[in-house]
Image 1 (tube, rainbow, N blue to C red):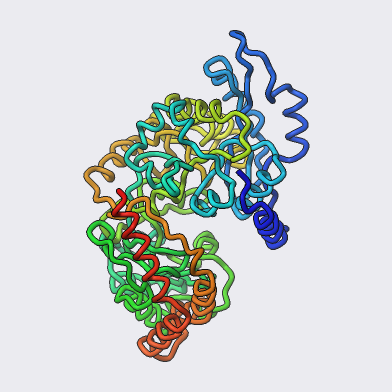
Image 2: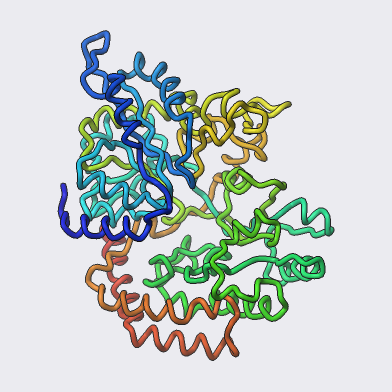
Length: 509
């Protein structure tokens, strides 16, 4: 259960040091003391003789200052305790602390049951580190949930063992561009689905004349190009290659030698020279999200699906809109970004799975976990039945919010503005007859290529920031040098190894 324990402890300690000051993870000691004092833990007798178990579930946010968590827990417990003999312990975690908190809680055997997988931790990585429990023996306790997500469950398998489950079955995504709709209306800018780099540049020229940047490449150490394309990318920055046409191809190719990457770099060079992005993008640490909130930047490329509207609208003082750049598809990346798993140290996996199952059967529980309490944390938007807004509520999203965690079936639960009552129909339509990646569920095990992977990562760190901020004299020459340095570091060896593993995976299906 705890293989690689020493390496896990060391890695978790190092991440804790690096992330110190970013935020606090998990429940505070006071919260734990309160839970124990209230008898919320194991051992409380239920009416029919079954003991009430408290299921701890992670809630991931950009802030740990959620004052009303206990209030929400109490409302959920009123439903779940008589129904399935369990209570809930909501463990609010800053997203930057998620890997450290999860790892350290397993190592120290702290209370933890249901954990968020995929946001910052690949299922294959944390399963290999002994953080996740094998689920195969417990799937029977979540029949409604597993039936709902059955088409995509294999994405949560590692070496044939089920370690995680998709958050829901509506997982089609596409490349998109999110932007300030109020700003677009003010300057008569119209963006349509399928917008090209040239279309964006035309809009950026209008914005430049009014002292506004089109977009930003701040924090340019991470690859941004893939946000403009529907590809299957391996490795955080394409370190292990990519599949260009995931629905129809299983060929792994060089990401940095692709026409896509070259097209993107030429656009960045043009935008930098035209003044459409901040001149100090190479060293800028301000995120594009922060720039957008300050209304200094118009927009940015992003993943596109129906849920992204509410995600990007949250906390913004202006109206947002998103254009879809390519047709939607279900890829492994879109499935594994958000999954549920059980901690390897979970004391009652049967009850934890029953709670997950109930969350997908009872929208009221999912709504409480996602939005909190009506009147206290949200109101129903006037003229709608299912759309929520924190505006006008007692404590609003400062009292309770869930920014990165999805709960329940999205076509049966509430949704947030700017979505409408048509949200469920829009989600179903967006996902209808969508092509699925031919390699769905596959992940590359890079353990045999650790030396090459480290060398490739160093090369990417050297070349990528300058290319995607347009800070090179000649794009083609720089990419040629980049690719040559990658190949010298073992990039092609990694791609060949990735292809061999994929071929074995496909032959075993």
